Amino acid sequence: MISCEEAATICNKTQYKEASFSEKIQLKLHLLFCSTCAMFSKKNAKLTNLCQKANLQNLTEKEKLKMKQEIRKKI
Amino acid sequence: MMARKFERPDRNMKVVKPNSITFDMHEKNMTAHQLNPDTWVDSYADYLFNYAIARVSDTEIAKDLVQETFFAGLKSAKNYKGDAAERTWLIAILKRKVIDYYRKINSKKGKAEVRVNYSSNGDSDGDWIEEQVADPFSSFENDSLENEELGVAIYDCIAQLPQKQSLVFTMKTIRGMSTEDICNELDINPSNLWVMIHRARTTLMGCLNQNWFNL
Image 1: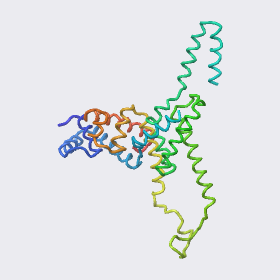
Image 2 (image 1 turned 45 degrees about the vertical axis):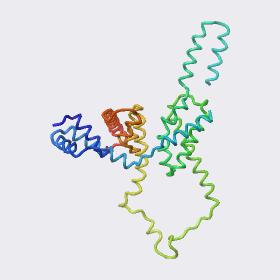
Image 3 (image 1 turned 90 degrees about the vertical axis):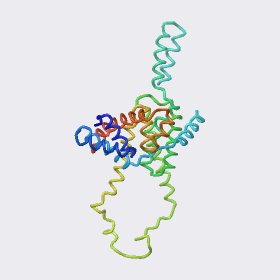
């Protein structure tokens, strides 16, 4: 049986599809008995869902570096 | 206003020495109002970029607007009174830039020829009005609107995270980098990374719960 902390870590890993098969089974088993973790898992999945839905954009490091250089020129 | 504050103790300093203490105080006051353009890109670029992209829906234009915002911020840095946080102040500038952008393309549009056809594929007739009525069962329009606001809400929450956590979270979630790459780049071990991810996610859940009710 895994602890809640371990369960949380595996749960986070599943959000990024990085949990192994045995980890997933352990988590599922834990969630059957632990309502707190089940709640956390549900919310965690929702957060992942929201992040996907929002289609967040990010500037790459290269673009940021260029911006910094431009700013430095102006100073 | 700041300049005046600065002059007075300067003048007094020549007369009596103890005033140098007040001078120090004012100097401290000055630094509190100062902006740090060096940190702007790291701290605000993503946030501003998302704000812009929600409004102009073109990555290139959004990028330019963010860059222009930084330039404008530099130019008017001496007008910054410290009433608002740096980020709020920059967003205010960006808002102006977005408005300016739309003004510019609108004035261009006036010169172009506008053609209105019933349908794009040649001549065909039908009931124009009937076909333009919004579909009450379509949630499509609202979805895209909500998603834009959602993006800004998420970035609002990410901005409240400690710097390292927000960095790890954005690398992992938004840029979708692999655990290994992040660990190499930031020189941390995987269990360290997962702890940070966990903290970031819990904070974000709480934050979005307040700002975005349906989590």
